[in-house]
Image 1 (cartoon, rainbow, N blue to C red):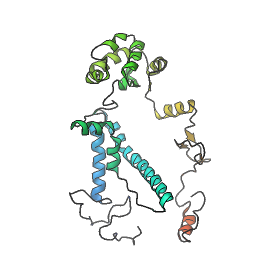
Image 2: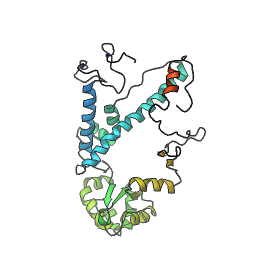
Image 3: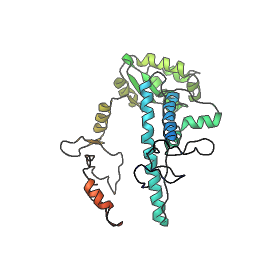
Image 4: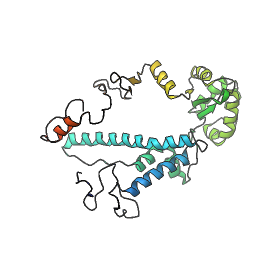
Length: 294
């Protein structure tokens, strides 16, 4: 919605998405006390929620990881927005009717809780900090190997648990009453992790990855960003896309479409690089096509 510079939108309407209201003006909260979208109170509430979620569900001993979790809320919400826009476009294709698509940080964060939210709704109990642990499967988390280096493992069922037990030289773990069933392993997770890490300490994450993947146990070392990109390259995923000489390359789109491949990206535009073309387009007829490469 366009409004003259320095003027607030009409009464009862929120400012355009991403903008706080003009200084000194704060629309009344919604019924029940919830802040209206687009208000300073709304942005403050959303950001406080992001921080709170990270601290409640993240690793209690790693504040940096908690901050990183909070920052991902923006990415999650953007992906939800893309999904909503695509659904609205499909509806328009069928009916000719357009509609408003709305997303917000709070709803996207709650939607991403998945197991944690389902567990709370089923039991009424609030989950506590779990770091990388899966709330209802064990071992499904990061485990310390030699020199404290981390190995991510994802043992999803009782049959699968027998394989790492044998690979670790402790097949009896799969028959131990504390660990034989997944529900027992979750209940006795502290003891389980202590036993597993005492065995894993004999080798590096990469050494264990070779041994465990050979018996179909999903696992892998916790990589740095450069190591993750190198892994994707070895797997043939071409994770980095050049966008022109002298420009910073971009991470390749994760989408793979057989009939309509993702178009080669361009470098992010420099300040006002496309300004003239866009202003000309905006001042032209409504059916005038968007300039190429904009």
